[in-house]
Image (cartoon, rainbow, N blue to C red; front, side):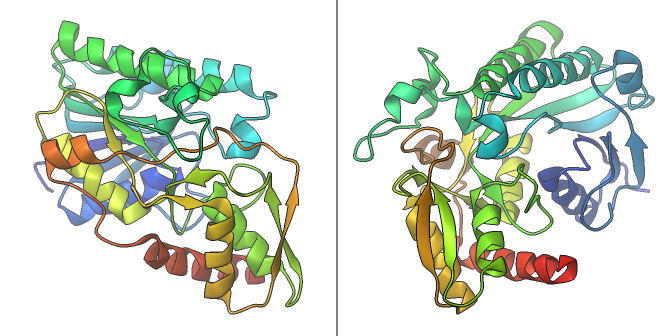
Length: 323
């Protein structure tokens, strides 16, 4: 057994499942914790604990030994169709807050070497992201605070929670602001999927000569980071001495229309776009990587297209399996 140990909360989710595999490959003994097993594939965790982290008693099940590294990825979340419609705001705020409070309270110097919390690009001020020609996500621009969703407000609160964990409890805390992570083994249907997965699914399902539905005018700008690139950034951040929030994302900006056309080209089909009303979030958002490159020497190594090719192939297979 390795003498390095890691605890991954949210190990049943998309990024968490990939993270468990990465840590195992690096020689860690890994315990995964979630209220469900991974939806796609199996977990490589040495132990997988089923626990509802909203309950303090349930969360305590995980801390029966000391862990060198704790990763807190568990959250109530989803894509634009879940986060931005308003119907799920109470669940998003209350469930995630309870999870983070319980995890933070259990992270003591006796139980935890260091902890990494995954925040989100949704913390950034919506007023700075309303113009397609001028938008910013430099880390310091999260304040003055005005996130575009309750999901963003909860993430901002929890960033500060984990920063106090380091200041007052002495447990080193690392905070990653993730920007639209995508890849295989993630949600691709049923309303919780992110834009790349939703678009890949729509393209895979469409008959040749058909249409792909896009919410809004499709001109909204985003950046998307392939999951393996994300893991590279998370590992560098966890091993660093940086205790301020850092962007982990791609600075390759692309419109949703362009993303859809990329997926169509990858598919080899002849399809057109059809725009319909739907939740869109801010007008423009793209990771600013100047600070993370300066402090960690990290930036994505592959273009968006590479990750989209792998992701489309996987989602196409899922669509065929469920047809």
